[in-house]
Amino acid sequence: MAQLVQYIYIVSAALFILSLKWLNHPASSRRGVWSGALGMLLAVIGTIVGFPGLLGGAGIGNVHNWGWIVAAMAIGTVVGVPIAYIMPMTAVPQRTALSHACGALAAALVGTAEFYQTNALHETLPTFQLVALIIETLLGYLTFTGSLMAMGKLQEVLPQRPITYRNQNAVNFVLFVIAAGLAVRIVLVPTDTFLFPIFAGLALLFGVLLIIPIGGADMPTVIAILNAYAGLSACAMGFALGNNLLVVAGALDGSSGLILSIIMCKAMNRSFTNVLFGAFGQMQTSHAQAQQRPYRSASAEEAAAILESAGSVIVVPGYGLAVAQAQHKIRELFDNLMRRGVDVKFAIHPVAGRMPGHMNVLLAEADIPYDRLYEMDDINGDFPQCDVALVIGANDVTNPSARTDKTSPIFGMPILDVDKAHTVMVIKRSMNPGFAGIDNPLYYMDKTLMLFGDAKAFVTEILKELPARVGA
Amino acid sequence: MNLELGLFVFMLATFVGLEIIRKVSPLLHTPLMSLTNAISAISVVGAILITGASDATPLTKVLGFIAITAVVTNIVSGFLITDRMVKMFKKPGAKK
Image (cartoon, rainbow over all chains, first blue to last red; front, side):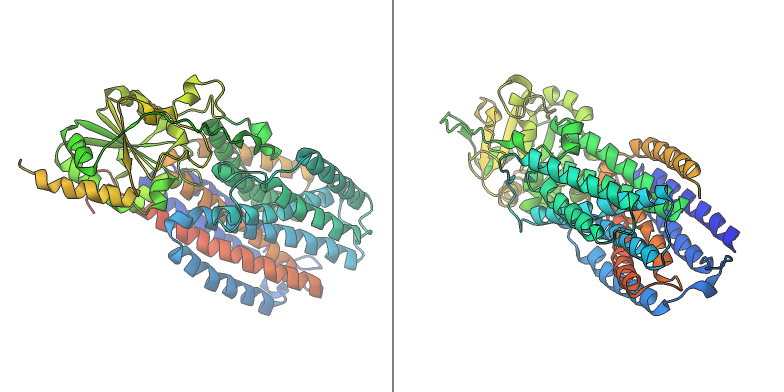
């Protein structure tokens, strides 16, 4: 039986790898999801049928405490199903943060339980397993509170503004050194169980301190990093329990979080090492220039006329579009213009939305075909030939001073070259600078028309103007 | 399990992960994150192993119970919501 479990785990690990491989394209992605689910089911069944006994041997007969296990699984299922179906797509970042928190908490608790269990039985773990266990609990607890903080910021329960205080990095560093010192002491003298709660408490506190200095705009990066941490804590659990399947699955999750955080950092021009140590709130100091400069605005009727006569339109959506729930109206505009022979594309900046790839999901939900969604590098070359760039709810990612103005806080950040289009139209509530408080010269260009209003209401207005012109 | 073998597995799995995830289209980065999150709920294995042991102390049982609840929530909601997301990506040209 013990042999069989290992074979089941091998199949399960292979299914996880295939699952991620199939996710590389929308056409095979559903197969990817279900092979991942199958891998998980096999892993659970394998663990139960091949449960290790105390005196060697393995089998389902060794499983005790069925009541606890089954009850926990039932509660998890009852809670999980509604979360999956009720959660609106705009809230996916919060759900992801919450599930990072749950996964990390589980890893931390398993580590804690194992630590006290071995102590209660007067056993000692081999040093390397103990080290793994400590890493598991450290990452687990800090990711738990860190993810809860991230969730609070995304849900706007907590202030989005970075919370900073003097000597923040020094305080964090000192705390980290104390935690690391305690960790070493616990590894050397595992019988000092009283140190463990202090260690766990510091890890929990550290998670909070790591996230509070980070502003709302940086959330995509933070979520990606927490993803990596959650994966690594599962991986460390694999070492602590001597289970290769956990090591593989944790490593897959860790590498995914790593790649996504690197992509997000590049997209926001942040250094990766800076982000790893949580010291990346500082760039958000307000640079608002309360300068009055002339700009041009236009009505829905004029906007409709320009869109109708255009040959090609590139829509640049931002998170504001999702906030205004304008996705479905944009789809109608897209359909309407495509029927008239206008070539409509969507330019997606990597940090559009609140987590990596969020905007794509929001547009896909509105039934916009995915071959119309273009990545930044693929579409930037198209702006100079494009008649109209329509910016909806996006701000900093279109700011040309990222290319030109060395004093700008976002200088060097890769942007969508909206300013190169023949005509630029920006739907915006008012001339107030965006969340980051950075003025956008795009709005004052001669070819830019400001369309003031709520994104959904304004697009509805444009749509009203459009059908009236059919056949005219 | 010995340490060397574990590290070997870790090293190989990390490289495999980096290679296959690099190929995932940015279009699907949100589903990717929710899928990898569901997969990392493999810690359910560890949670079952500690909770189901015959010598589990009451503390272990309680912590294990919370851990299983948390990860099973992740597994169920993670796979289902990822499926819900990828279903929405319509084939090019396909009218709804």
